[in-house]
Length: 59
Image: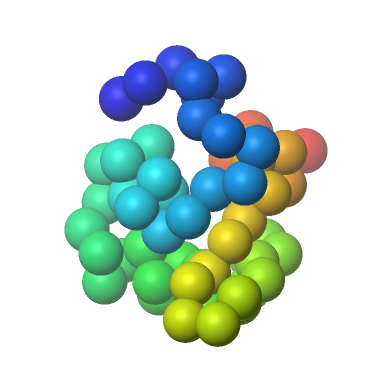
């Protein structure tokens, strides 16, 4: 896993997979659980890194 600062400001599902060490299906389930805000742009799902990090650390 790369340092979180090395990731772009807007993450995609693959980034979430790598950061958490989970599979593709689990990443999509997590995003669809609406535990943090995500945006669908066409067929792509985008998550602000700041929002994800806040969720990850419980802020």
